[in-house]
Length: 257
Image (cartoon, rainbow, N blue to C red):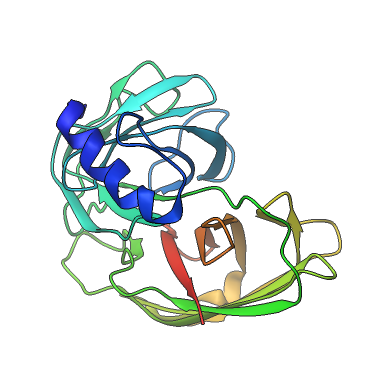
């Protein structure tokens, strides 16, 4: 949990966007992805309504509320960044606390076991957006992970793009991800933009191809626009690889070009 000086420091960043005062903790939306599976939790990507988030003095997320209550983290945060409009990071190596669905879970976070919670949070977009926009991956994004056999291996996001047409309320995403088993490409067409959220719908088309997709691969994702004028975006994703006992999960922060 952060103390008052920590909240003030992050709020000072948010002042750039005019969305908070130094006396207030920031009210941001948040999406998460995680490597572990919980009963009745569905695909391990979730998005929660705008809420008062708990950041520390370095801009690292220390707590959020899921659908059942608070989830907190007092240990190191990896692969993290915060530019005042969007923040991202990885919780690993320890146990979450709180009373929420994702609280009191042991997440080792080490290479090989590779359990973690990944978060991306952003200032809610405050106005109706017009026209079209393209977004590129913001530097310092969280690396995706796949628990593939217990050996250390590099995993990374090679590239990605988000294209949004605000006049039609549709979005398109492409990702290229490399994990120990190989390279995977994800494309999502006709995603819906609803009240600043990026959602799949019955007419959306998600496709995954890659090294071990011969047995089938399926993607799940959820995201949002961030910043008062939609200057940023956040995405949590999960790729179910049928040929593996573990899957690929991660989050991405985007910057509008």
